[in-house]
Image (cartoon, rainbow, N blue to C red; front, side):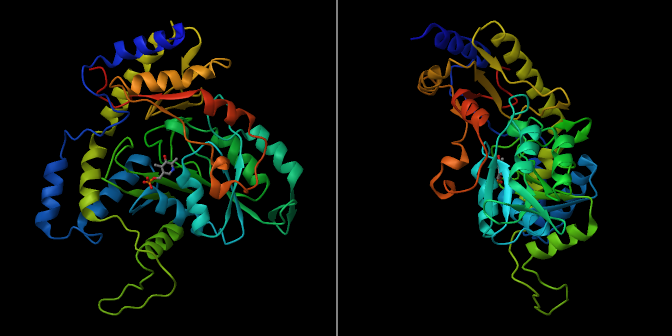
Length: 387
Ligand SMILES: *Cc1c(COP(=O)(O)O)cnc(C)c1O
């Protein structure tokens, strides 16, 4: 085995310090989870009209300092509705990093629009605003306050920056470029609940944002998502679209558009409410783990723990080792050895432009994403790891 590979493995083994299987990320249920879920069952209202859906929405909007939160069945549906609310239509293009989870692109495809992939920078792992600005000036034309791709003739309606592993993208810079080109911004904040950008909560840095409460995220509802906005009108529309577009009425069934059954059931919201009560503690524990990893790997030449960009505070949802350029050939050796020896590790997602359904999507030069994709190794990151 390569000497660096064995150093990485022994450093990791020391920190996780376990004789048993160590997963990448698991939830912790140590608060009011059983109490609230039981209470929800006793109320009989386990579905989305139950009180816990309203309670969790109120608590979460207070936590975020956002005017409105609308809960959905998962993060993908939250993204889907955010795109609809920002006016994305079939045949539009939506910019997004190629380095993101497939759901970001799928939500765009549900509308019949096309994902258009952009590169990331290696300081944030998020959209590179400088490269984006140069690219848009080369390939777009503005007509009547709308941005069009000169190559495809299609309208570029929105951009979806994603905060990779909980590390914030440079939102001021991205918002500025998008504003110049009349492009709406929707944050994919599925991985970054609790992260701060210049002191502001992730999910509050654009007109609309999507969160996820899947089982592997920093807090979970079992499955769930949320739309976050300061715009009451958009929030009301989000409620309407996610409840089969039914006009409120005591007994009549009148629906005024093709709606969706996307609201989070109260039984899931009860679980998530209890989880939210412990989020600040999870954040502290995860930060402490990241610092332990960082210090340990500082002694291993050839690899680094990815740390929060200077303008932000990360939730350290998923820790990532990044091999130095030239060491990419070690990645698979590390993955194979750790996964065969009770320590779960993973590479990053396949870049979305390499997936069959998105291989013909428009894209810019993706040099940085391609290099990172070969060098990232996610390591165990649950709040309890090593303790
Ligand atoms: C988890 C995730 C989603 C989707 O959330 P689900 O709740 O699983 O539908 C979207 N985008 C990113 C970047 C994610 O990590």
